[in-house]
Each structure stands twice: as structure tokens, then as C-alpha cells.
Image (tube, rainbow, N blue to C red; front, side, top):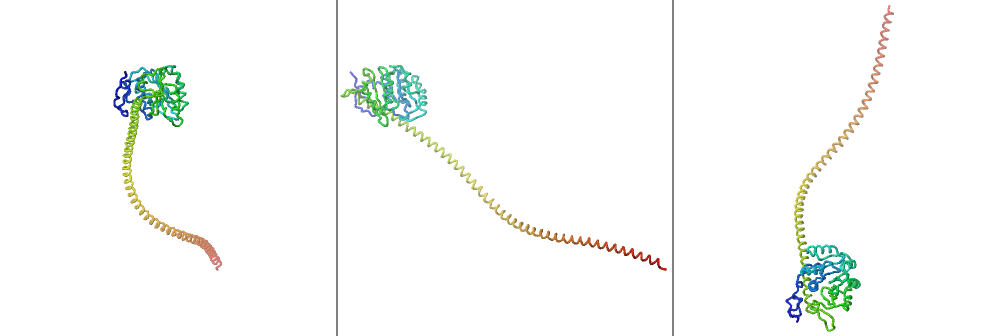
Length: 388
């Protein structure tokens, strides 16, 4: 007979609900805090269920189509490591983004660094398209397939149908975003079709997660948390739904807290940076103030010097005007002297000419006198000769 117990207190879960909890109360992974929650926590609400599923299902090969930041992949790895489970885990993604996720850079490198730091030797990342990765796996080999790629109807249908041959007879398929009905998202519509053909249940929180079991008989872990409704449709028991949602809220709360903490740290860094900048600006202001005072003192000295220079300039200007006046008078005097010199020079030339003429006249008269003297002497001689 199944054991009926009361669930230990858990935030968000009614404490008076009793169900068959053997697989829940003995779980080693259900209450583990998630080790990786990123700034894209759309899958974080399903981390507790994902780890519990790995524990109960014990898959030998897990393939994830659409890994992005690795929240779900890290959950699979965390559970496998906690359980020492012999399991290979593969994440397939182009890590380039698309029109639904947005395009991003550095996500692949960040996830690879995280996995390397954790030392998970059983996980492998394949940077390629989903169809390209088909050749890496044999048919009937994948025990757990997680589909979280491009979210149009055609894309998710193609992913499921192309990977269907790779699934083992006991495989479980997880499909994310089955309750997102915006833009061209079509996972919800394809999920309605799958539910007609496969044993399945779904979670409504965190964008919705569909769970399909290919096992011919319902596995015990699935039976422990599900029941058939009046129409024979398999559904999660209310307590199990509330439990996994409540536990899933914790990673979301952690994500919100981490995001708030990250924002606070950024604000603190910004504040510290602003304070440093303010201190630098204050120091610069003090320095500029000192420079201003020095400049003002220099300007005052320059003003005094300029005043002295102005007074000197006024004096020099007066002296210059006096000198210019003296020079003008001197020039007038020189011009007058030059005129006097020209007049004297003309008089001198006339005097010299007169002297030359006088010398000529005197010479002529002297010659005449000498001739008269000679003539007088001759007359005297003749007179003497003729004197009886």
C-alpha cells in the first residue's frame, strides 16, 4: 500500500495536502539550490523538476536542442553530478540567437567557462545547427530530449520529427514555451497535436513545459505525480503541480535577487566611480582655483606693469612729439642753411669770377705799364742821344 505522508513545509504549497510522496520525500535533488541562473531565467522555474526527472528517469544520454545560456543544461549536469550518474549530456546550439531570443555574443564562451570550472567531463557542447547534429547520435539512443529552439510551429515540428528516430523506447521529451502565444510562436499549437498521440503532462509556469513519455507503460516516477481525469487524460496532481511550481519560484526569486544584487553592485560601482570622479573634479577644481588665483595675481601685476608701460608710453610719446618738433625745426634750419649756402656759393662764384677778371685786368695794365716804361726808357735814351 502506498505510503501517505504530509509534505514538509514549502513556501507556496498548502501544508494540509497529502499524496503519495515516496519519490518526492526521498529525492536527493528536488531541493537542491540551482547552481546556474542567468539573466535570461525563462527556464529557471523548471530546474527543480528537471533535476528530479534526471534522478528518477536515470537517462544514459541527454540531448538538448537550444541551450542558449545553459540554465536547463546546467540543471541536468548538476543532478547527474550529485547522483554520480553514468550519463552523457550534449548541448546543441548555434549560439548566435534568432528573432525570438535576440542575437547575442559571448554566451557560448561564458557557458563553456562555467562548465569547465565545474569540471563536468560528461557534458559536450556542439556549436552547430540541430539538423547537423543528427549525425552525431545513433537511432534509439537518446533517453532524454529537450527541445527549446526556434519557436514557430514549423520549426518545433521539424525538430521533433527529425529527432524522433533518435529516441529510445523509454525516452522522455521536454518541450519548452508551450504556453507562449505571442507573435509567430507556434509551440503551443504543436503541443496540442502531440498530446493527442503521446502520454504527456504539462506545467503552466515559466512559459510552460511539456513532458512526453515514450515508454509503453507509464514509468513509476510519472505515475507518482499524475492521475487520469474523468476523461481519461493524464494530468499532474494539483499538489505536484503546486510543489514543482513553488520550488521553481525559488530559482526565479534567486534570479530576481541576483539581478537586483547585480544592479545594486553596478549602482555601487557607478556611485564609487561617481565619487572618484567627483573627488577628481574637486581636486581639479581646487587646482583650477589655485591657478585662477595665480592668474589673477599675474593679471594684477600685468595691469600694474601695463599702467607703468602706459605712463612710460605717454612720456615717450611726449618726448617723441618734442623730438619730432625739434627735428622739424632742425630740418627747416638745415633747409635755410642750405639756401644760405647756395646763395653764398653763388656769391663766391661771382667773387671768384670778379677776381679772375681783376687779375686779368691788372695783368693787362701791368703789361701796358711795362710797355710804357720800356717806351719811356727808349725815349729817354733817344733824347740823350740827340742832345747836343
